Amino acid sequence: MLVTVVSAVHLLNAQTGHLHIVPDHVGDTHFTSGPCPDIVPPDGATCPNNTATCAAFYNPALLPAGYNSVSYCASVPAGVGFLSPGITMMTRPLNVEEQKAFLKAAAFIEGFVKDDQTVVIEPYKVDYLDEYGNNYVFFGGNEYWNPVCAADALLPPFTNEQPTIVQNNDGSYSYQGLPETYTPVLDALQQKNARNMSPMKLIDYLPSQSEINVEWPQTFYGWQDNTDVASDLVSNFLVQPSYNYPITQNAQPFTLCAAPAAMKMLGFAPMFAKNGHTIDDINSPEYNMNVTLSGTDGALVIPDAEWYWMLDSTDPNIVKTQLPKAYFEQSLNYALPYSACSDPTVCQFPEGINAGTDLIGVYKHEIDHVLGLMQSQYYKVSGEETSIAYTYGTALFLLDLFDLDSDYVLPGYGHAGIHSYTDFKYAPRNNDTYEPQTILGADSPSGLTPFTQFGKHDHVMVYAVTEGFPSYFPMMSDTVGNPDGDIQFQQGTVYSDWYTVYRPYFVDPLIQATPALDELHLNVQAAFIGGTIAVQTIREYSELAAEGWNIDYSTLKNQYRTRSPLAEWYTQCFDENGVFTTSKDSKCKFDVRPGVVNY
Image (cartoon, rainbow, N blue to C red; front, side, top):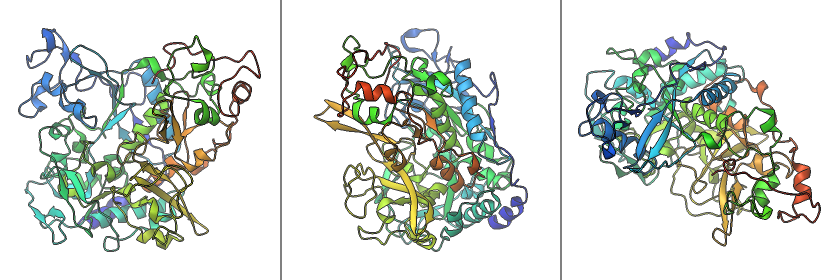
């Protein structure tokens, strides 16, 4: 049934066009105040300290049993992914400058994603407040959307028939009588890819359902519940019991999942127009407690921290202050006092630099997530508290098909490696997150990838095979401040003498190969080191192409070979060990003003 429907709707897909991201203008109604604004509780709940207003849920009728508008905003949303129950989430609307930054980020992505598809996002910002009103900023940005699998179209609420969960012979769990839906999604991806202006060759070599080689973790973290729509709700995160379930080896996937935006683009939206529902109901307010508007593909959230954002990374005054890579590798020490500038040897940035975090890059990262850049690794390890239903324990996200353990990519370490597209087809997917401890650094043992291996999470994405050599970049690495399975950071932090030296270590081979005096651009996924800006790179392009998006590669520019405008300053004011000095030039100085540099 599913394959027939997919074949029909493929005819409706436009081969070229342009992506349309909503909101698309300042003041757009999709810029909202979020689900927990500072209001008088609409259900009469009592605010902390009996204040008249506080963070309260906007529509108490949507709350699960046992919560009122104040208690929900004080526990459930803030506890998701940050292990912080009891800290209030107060949501606020973006100011005009923050809205403009979002629109610039959307325009960047619309410039190279050439699909006639509308993606609707609800952006707002958030404070994390304790009972005394202190603000705790936990993250640079966050996206809230419920993944959708092809199997969802065969389950409630899209049907009235309640499913039965059964244990398979291999020890995995699935729904009784539910057909595998890996194949129709893979077929849709391959057909869509064939129509794109720059087809991604690897997609033609993805394994069929019977061929896929799965390397499972020892356990799977999740809730045992009836449907993805029911169990992946934010409202269930702290009201449903969660466990680490055992998974036996050789379990086979039966469905593929992605963001609703990717599934719509692949042509699956008509499958969900059943039982009075549409695919948009996956992220309607009734099913996603972080969304207040129907018809969205999810919510996108930033912290309410105007004081340290670079609001426009395209501004020439910001571009001209980009520091050389050598400064970050040799000189930036996170353990130094942030604003102790009476002594220039302990300041961090040169005079005039805007050392904030690139808000456009943060938005690009979160929009990319909404477009589908998420992996099931994110759902396999306890502690993230964003687990997919255990009954989808044999599911894969589309990007997982390109996500390989680094040990399998290069020859050696007990594996043959990838030398051809056929080798890529048979490499294990859904790789084990419980890897043995490896080492830090580029000088890895033979067979390991030549970049950081921060412990057990050493996954890469393969995006091409050229003359028998795979092209790849790191997907995740355990202790780089990266949530399990996310794709955002390009650096970890290295300690020496425990906080005496605390500086970044760069993961991506392209960044490692950047000349020391060239600008350091943290490719894709935002710039979480102050004073750097994000750029578009092959990493972002290939990840989106792997999801089926039609990518215009002609818009990709090599931004790794741009000499820093401050290269001369660095060579004059730092010695060969990266230590600030005035011995070469008595005019050398740092001047970092309080409120400009913040971490």
